[in-house]
Image (cartoon, one colour):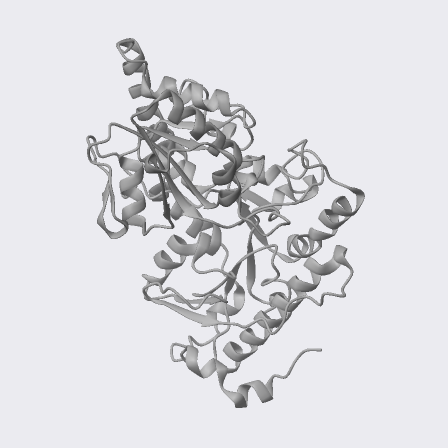
Length: 441
């Protein structure tokens, strides 16, 4: 079987799936991406390059569509080079939204197209109008509507697709629900597992909290309003006032991954550090961490805070639950699809730093008021992991993903020769191939 993965990032949601498929000697696995860094065993990574961004003079409503078309065109050229060297996929699996899968059916019409449908945009009722302090105008609503254009094209063209949560699947138009199966990427619960008595010591960044009994953790790709970073930081100020021995560890980059940046060029981290009275000796920003160090943070956590607008669910919340963290999370979709308040975690009002701090007090205990409280909190940790083992365990979901992807073999796969010797990545930038396959427009 010949499988082509497409994602601007690498390996993103396809890390485990691509790795598992590549272990089978009967498979050829190729991954088309823009990201130079990284590799997976047995996976042939092929780079495509987007020649230029959308033109600044393009109408603002359709800039995202133009970007997707440019991305799709770059992937098409990459696919032409692969085809010239004998690689014709039986299955293409790509992330919908940024454009890599837009034209792949034109190049490989017999291949099954399998879409990863992460999000469908709405101006009202989910993330965009969630914060009353950040209202939408008519231009923003129109721009959001047009942003769905490449996703709708993929929905029409794909053979089938998946979405990781029921909440995310429900954002797509009802007429396409039959095409989209709810199937999460999966959490590696053998890696993300509890370690009772774990101490947090990260020599690489000079962090030693081995003598600290109260560690509150927070993990994010970007420090941004979409993931409740301002509210989290306001709660940190309250937590530090109430709990003089508590340390807070923040894992993630000082950037915006989702949503808008500040107009003055400051980051939200800079803004909150300037705004709040914080004890920086008890507030530790680690930046992004390798998985093994990130795991140590979760294993040493006394309470883990996760906040999100009604948007895509972060892996980090599920990873924290798998590790046995006591998770304090926002009472928002899709969190409430996973966490039941008082059963496998604690829920809070996204906009209430006071409530977040109150629940941290509850999670860390109130001095001598332990006993039944301690037992209940330990039960929350156990049930959090049980939730992941039951519904989100990679060991269970990965075989389902493979079956979903490879369940229906294209007819041509029975007769087309297996092109085991197609060219390595370097030859795909051959000038002769570029002359043979010029720009589409």
